[in-house]
Each structure stands twice: as structure tokens, then as C-alpha cells.
Length: 500
Ligand code: BES
Ligand code: ZN
Ligand code: ZN
Image (cartoon, rainbow, N blue to C red):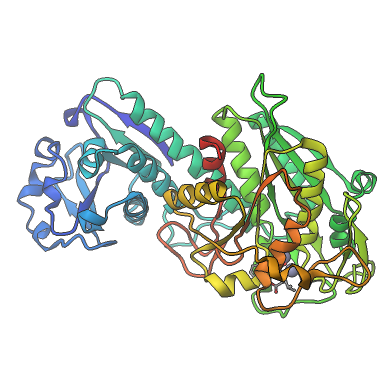
């Protein structure tokens, strides 16, 4: 779906449908004054009286088919006092979904309607565009549309009264669009089957986007990883015929070459069978999205390059496939990370932290980061603790925690802080190595985070995001079909944009 603009006021507007977001108890015909000129019939349409605008309610009202804008698609926002970016994001997704069901080609949103909802309408405009695009998302790379699936709505226009589209409207719409396209890139990656998307294939995609968006891309193959001493990441990939890779993307605006960078690290396990400690088969196919963290980082990097973010940002994707082959790592193995620390492997299904610890150590050695934020589908324990709507956040840095919690909430990605409980550190003691990679089941997400913390130097600000459970929906929502949702992509983009 293209995002377009229309100017010159309602006399010049044209689309298959006008989208109206309505607060509970309010009259759709009063959503903006432009309706008087554009859809006066709405004031007398009998069906309008039955529309209650409860949150999520959708109704279609018809004017004469020959009109420039022959339909109104109204969506309820719920109580006016509770209207926020999230409500508008969802309303836009629902409205455009109804347009698609109706087989419509185009829709428009009157900008004054958003201005009437809030004095700070810019975020509402961004979320309208982002929500409309995400609501249309489906992963169709490998199938054709079924008989009852309609093609996408071709374009959505932001309709203004001015002759020239105001700058703030234009900028907000493009920002919402850029974010949505990044999220969709992350979804596509995480939805791609694991026989198609394996570490080397992900590296190729990263290089292709690196060229397209202007990111310096480096790929460490198996030989380079051996040279660098990343034996924890390599151990994860040993059981697979598909070799491990470390993908590094750098966005560096001119003059910032010597800045200490913000480093994003995303877990890139392209399939997690559990290895020798193999997982039960139920829902194992969803482990193709065990690279959702890597997908979020890669997608965020494309958006930051595209908008020429004025900050040096590095994305690292430690990638491997966790398989139980003849050379697979076993419980009891001891391997060294690239900073020389030895790690005792106790359960081969706790592979994510092995991939991440090498990336953290490599980042510190190579880039002297100011801040590291890692994102990973790391533990089932985090999902048990927080469910599937809110992800875990671990950090000892209050300012970083605040930035992640607030920026995440603003873009509809929710995080909740869990403790890096010092008393549990002794649970990671090993008799044979510097550290064991896991502790007891109880507090599993915390033990995983504490293991990562062991690799973070005291001078580096660091946060860990555990998105296990939130990265995948088992039931369709307004903003996503079943499958990968691209969780964390927008939070990372916002962190780089606004600074931390
Ligand atoms: N990829 C999984 C975590 C996961 C579980 C993500 C469910 C999404 C949904 C991870 O590699 C894993 O298997 N972790 C183990 C660790 C345990 C063996 C210490 C877990 O959480 O059970
Ligand atoms: Zn695992
Ligand atoms: Zn995993």
C-alpha cells in the first residue's frame, strides 16, 4: 500500500472510502468539519444513529456511488479521555482491513480529524500510517492468495486543506511508513521457513539491504569466527550442516567515525531444535523465529540508514542453527568465548546466550561501545513470567530502563523490568569453567540475563530485552496475522533516534 497526500480541501479529495476514527458516544458526522462539504449525506444516514463507537467497532456507511468519496468507514476508539496512539494505531489497522475485505482500491484520512482528537496530533498521524500498513501485512512470499482473500488496498492518502501538504504532516506520515516497512521486513525474515533462511542466507539478505540502504556490512564466516575465537557461537552451529555467521552492520554519519557507538545485538538462531537436549515436537516449527532478535536489529538498521540517523549505530547478528548433528555440542562441553572466558554448557537448548555472549565480547573488543542493547527470544521462563503481551527488560542503568520503557510503550511494544538479582550470580558457578551458562529453572530468565551480564564490561551501559513469547502471535490481532510480529524493531529505532 502506497502512502499518498491530497491537498486543496474536501472539494478536491477523492478515494473509495474516507476513514473516520470516532470516540465513544460521539457522532461520526461530527468527526471533522470537512464532512459537511464532503459527505453531507452522513448527517442524515439513518444507520449512523446505531453506531456506538465502542473500541474496535467498525461500520461502513454508503453515500451515492457517483460521489468522489462514496463511503465512510467508521471505527470506534472508545472513550475520548482514553484515546492515545495505541487506540489510533489499532483503529487505522481495522479500518484498512475492512476496506480490503470490501475490495476497495483506496482510502483517505482527513488530517483535521486527527487534529480534533489531540493537540499533539503528529504521533497520531504516524501511528495511523504505521497501523494501516501493519494491518495489511501478510506473509505471502511462498503461497498464492486464497479465494476469499482480497488484494491489498493500493493507496492511503492523508487529506489536507492546504494547497501544499504541510511539512509536519509529510514528515510524520513518512516516519510512520518507514517504521512500518522496517517492522514488515523483520516479520518477513522471522516468518521465512528455516530451510530457506539459515545463517548464510540471512547474511546475504543483510548484505543486499546493506547495499540498498547504505550500511557497511561485514560477515564473519566460520573461518573468521575461529580466527576471532568465538567458540561459544561456533559451538551452537556445530551440530548443523549450515555454518554459523556473525553479521555486522554499521551506520556511521560523516564526522562520527570516532564516536563510541550504540550497539544492537540480536539473537539469530535460524532454527532451534534444542540440539542434543532436543525440544518436544509441539509448536517446534515456531522456533524458525528464534532469530526474531536478529530480524529486529537488521530491520531497525535499515530504517536508521534510510532516515540518515545522526548517530553512529552498529548492529550485530550472531547467527547459527541449533541442530543435534554428529558434531553437535553436548551437555558437559566447555568452550571459550572470544574474550577468553571458559563456559560450561549444561543444556544445549540454552544456546541463545552462547551466541550472544560472543557478540557482546566481540563488540567490546572491536567497537568500544557506549551502549549495548541486546534483544533475544531467550527464555521460555520469561514467557511464563510475563505472558505474550509484554517482554522482559534487564538493566542496572535507570536512564536506559526509562528510555526503553517509555519509547517502547509509545510505539506499542511493552517491556517490564525484571531484576538482575545479584544473589543468584553464585548459581552460575562452575567446577570446571569460569562460568556455567545456566542456573536452576526457577528464575530462568534472570539466570540467562546474569550470564550475559558476566560478559559486559563495567564501563559499558547495557540492557537486555527478552522477547520470547512476544515475538510471535498464535491468534490474529488487528495489527498482525498469526506468526512473527517484528517485536522490538520500533523500540530500537526510537532508541537510536531519540538517544539514550
Ligand atoms: N529459543 C528458546 C526460548 C523460547 C521458548 C523462545 C519459547 C520462544 C518461545 C531458548 O533457546 C530455549 O530453549 N531456552 C531454554 C533454556 C533452558 C534450557 C535453560 C528454555 O527457556 O527452556
Ligand atoms: Zn533453545
Ligand atoms: Zn533459542
